[in-house]
Image (cartoon, rainbow, N blue to C red):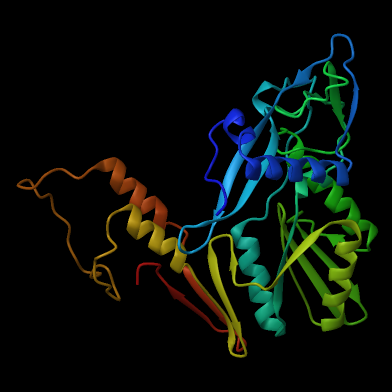
Length: 322
């Protein structure tokens, strides 16, 4: 059995499983050529690093993998010195719904992939210096620091650097970027279309020609280390099922989370939560409603419909609590 979660660097360094996890993370840095060890420049702004530890568990709660991630203390960065621009666009849920609606209309399957250590691929424009990792200081050069060539998790500009690197790669591969949604990309091959939607390190894609799907997978693997997840089934909190009759979307996982959060898991289901002609009047003989809790419940339901797209271009709607 793997080691349980470590709370401090010293605790982790005392356990061989965590030491191996940290070494694996540093090996990823070397493989991606993230940084270079150099003498610390005079008056340089050197940003600190810290380890973040996490356990991956199976259904029975047993630890199956120890994951250590080395992150930058971004809160110590100074604007104008360590970073300039931090903005990076993120796909909206509406864009994903339109993407799936178009896939259902054109009758093609949607697939999902993710990029391993995505931010480590982002090329930095700024000069950033970081300390040597806690517990892994070079004995020969203890006063040296690292200069970053690629982004590291925790950097304020890391999302921007990754997005710009990915966008540049797709454009060089003859993809056209969406004018309204900059996270949407498309590519025409004759009469066939390949469409791609980006959400940080998660990518969904589909095409009217299956050969373009295989071509896109090979293209991505030439630049980034990818993990193929097959046909899309869960994305941005949406449970997605694809079939010959259409694409079905529900938010079962989201709904169960809400029911557990508000203590309603044991309540019975009803098709319509409240009659349309119900007249509401003050109830002075009962305890006052917790306004904050009520607002949280209503806010959780706003803009969270279930939707079904069929091949026959029909639309049907359900509320998530029905």
